[in-house]
Image (cartoon, rainbow, N blue to C red; front, side, top):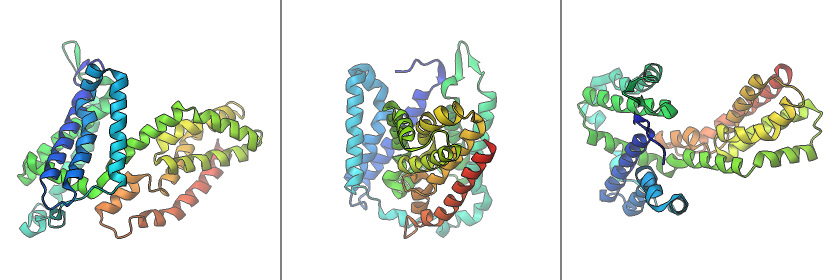
Amino acid sequence: MNTVNSIFSIQIVFYLIGLVLMSIAWMSVRDQSNPKRWTTGLFWFLFGIGFLFGDWMVAVWGKAFAYRSLGMIVLALAGLAGANLLGSGTHLQTPNWDKNGYAVKLKNKLFLPAVAIPVFTVTLSLIGKDLKVGDMFLLDPKNLTLACLTIACLLSIVLAASITRGSLVSGIKESRRLVDSMGWALILPLMLAMLGGVFVAAKTGQSIQTLVTMWIDPTSKLALIITYCLGMACFTMIMGNAFAAFPVMAAGIALPFLIQQHHASPAPLVAIGMLSGYCGTLMTPMAANFNIIPAALLELKDKYKVIQYQIPTALAVLACNIVLMYFLV
């Protein structure tokens, strides 16, 4: 359990997320129009347990048993999603905004809450990092951005309610509508971040370094650069996140060969390397928050159509990255 040294701590953020997930689970179970309402509610209930009761589980059961229990919950989530046991209600296809003329009446005012989130987040990040009440920080200094983002979202909800004359319950219902539209893919970024940690803990970077030594001439700058850029793209396609691929490829190729052996400039090297990873993001369904979720929200018939259109651009940018890295780094 983390030591709380701030009023608005990371624990409060997790509790808020857990409460929203539990509300979504309860609404899903009560939705008679959803043929899979019990398993859908169970999925979001299990997902919310870690956020709402994680600290309590560690404090009462101990880390070992609590972590094993959460691991079993992760397996249960994978089983429910893999068995296609998540559904949605028919109400999702009949929004009443256009019928009542709200969207036409409010027009561009509807965008104000969305724009307010980054504005509030940046403002709070700049002015809130040193704010204290007595001996305690107002915002969690170790997770300042996340705390500011959470407060910004809460303020944006208030702004949205004042504009639309809605309520908190309406906001939760709309959250559930979006969650049902996205389905299990909503939690994929969190799972992939965990996967990146597993790769680092398993010392995959050292294994890649050994393979590079065996199959590639370490004195060839071009071969190393091509391997690094392609590796960043491929690992990102596997893990769905360039940030998860970065430590693996940095430990395996960038640091031991390009920086230490060939004295490459670290800043442009890792910057172009990350951009190469983003090329992989454009070409994989594992990057659900970029490729699958937008397709679901736009109700595209082919959820992979977005990826198909992005592949030529991704390959072109990847080739340019290799050239830039060779001549600039």
